[in-house]
Length: 110
Image (tube, rainbow, N blue to C red):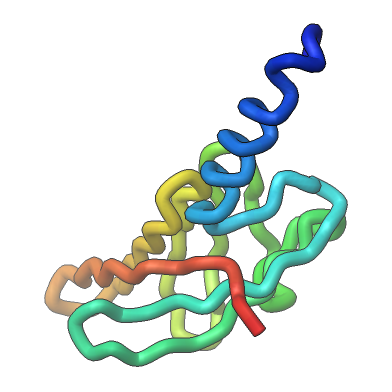
């Protein structure tokens, strides 16, 4: 809670800057669409986070203040999204030991 009206514009500006680069909105009951990019290939895709139902693209997810994690049974990969940085880590198991892929996600802009 802001205790002084004098600091309200500063807090509002700082909060706006913080949210501009984050991957997920502050409202826990809301939904968000994010655009994720593989920096190596440049390919992009959309993910949708439903905070009210704790899902990502209809898959059950664990949502905390710092990260969102889920498993996609279609490709067998496990995903972890860092909510502060937008860094998305994909962990894929394979017979050769598996591998990690790193992506970057940001709020979808229309």
